[in-house]
Amino acid sequence: MTKKIFKRKIYDRLLAWKQEENGESAILIQGPRRVGKSTIAEDFARREYKSYILIDFSKVSGEIKSLFDDLTDLNYIFLRLQTAYKVELHERDSVIIFDEVQLAPKARQAIKHLVKDHRYDYIETGSLISIKKNVKGILIPSEEDKIDMYPMDYEEFRWALGDEVTIPLLRKFFGLKKPLGDAVHRKMMRDFRLYMLVGGMPQAVEKYIETNNLSKVDEVKRRILNLYEDDFRKIDSSGIMSDIFDSIPAQLTSNARRFKAATANDGTRHEVITELIPDMVDSMTIRQALHANDPATGLSMNLDLDAYKLFLCDTGLFVTLAFKDKDVTENIIYNKLLSDKLSANLGYVYENVVAQMLVARGDRLFYHTFPNESGKHNYEIDFLLSRGNKICPIEVKSSGYKTHASLDAFCEKFSSRIGEKYLIYTKDYFRDKDVTYLPVYMTGLI
Image (cartoon, rainbow, N blue to C red; front, side):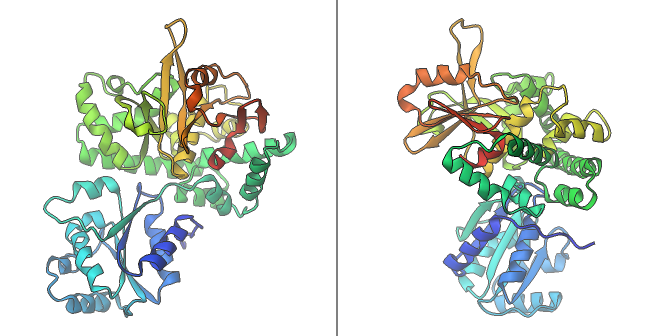
C-alpha cells in the first residue's frame, strides 16, 4: 500500500530555506521518530527538484557509507552515488537527502565540504538525541540550519481529514472575540476530542482514515510507544528512562507541583534521574515545562531547574500510555472519551494537549506555583507565555467551570506584568471583564 503523503506546514519552511539559502547551507529536520521527517523530505525533493537521491543510513551498504570517509575527490563520490541509485544529478537542481544521518557521523561532517562545493542541495533528517550521541570525533558543520518537526498540529489534522475550512473560520471568531453558538461549539469539541484521541502521528492518522476504528489506531500508537521505549533502553540499559516515560500520565494526574523523580523509579537517586531527563527532552518524545520562579518577560532567566513537569509530544500517544494497563485500549473507552462521558479525571489529558499546541506554535513551556493564603496549598498557573513586554497566564480546565482562583491570585500578585489572561476550558468563547475564556480547540490561535 502506498504511504499517504499529508500536507504539513514544515513544507513551507523547507521552501523558504531553498529559495533564501540557494545552496549556501544544508538543512537538518530533527524530531521524534515516526513523526514524518523522511516522508516530508522526500516529498519536498520530488516536487521541488529535477532529481534527488535519498541515502537511508539505516539500511545503506557499508560501501556507500564509506564514500564519506575521504572527500578528496567529490566528482568520484557523486559519480558513485548516481551509479548506485541510478539517478542523474543536475547542478543546482538536485538534492541529496541524508536520511537518519545520526547513523553516519562522517556523512554529517562531510556537509561542510559538500555545501562549499555548491553543486547540489542537502537535506538531513534525524533524531536529535541520537545526533547528539554520535558526534564524538567529528566536526559539526556550521553550514547546517535546523528545523524541528512535531506531530501534526490541529490544523494539519483537519487537513488530513479533508477539512481546510474549520481553522480559518475559528481564526475569524477569535479575531472578532465572539462565541460560536452552542450547536457549532459542541461539534467543534467533538471534532477536537477526536484529535486528542488519534493524535498527530502520521501513521495513526492514516490508520484512522483507513479503518475508522480507534482500536486499530491504538495498536499503531502502541507500536510507536514500544519503539520509543526500545530507544530509551539503548541509551539507558537500566530501564530508568522507560520508567520515567511510563510514569508521565500518573505524575500529571497527581497535580503535584513538580515531577517527582523518586516515584518514577523507586530507590533511584534523584541526581541519576536528573541526568537522564535532558536526553529524554532531546529525543523530542517528551516536553518539559520549567518552573519560572519570577514570572517576567525573560521567563528563561529565572528558573528552578529542579522543578519541572513532563508532557508527551503527542496527546494521542499520551491517551494510549495512560491506559497501558490493558493490551489494547478498548473502543468503549475511546467512545466515552470522544463523547466526554468517561468518569476518569481528564484534566491531565487537556493539559497535555494544550502543551502540545503551544509547542507546535513555537512557544517554550513555563509554569508557576506559589502558596495560597493558608500556606497549606499552592496556586498554580499551568502555562506562562511571553507576549511583547507582558506575561500571559493560562489556566487549563477539563470542564466548563469558570472559577479561576489561581489566575486571580497570580494577576493580583504580578499585576504590572500581566497582559492577556486566559482560561482554557471546554465551553464556548466567552469574555468576562479582562479574562478570556477560550475553548480548548482555539489554543493554537493565542
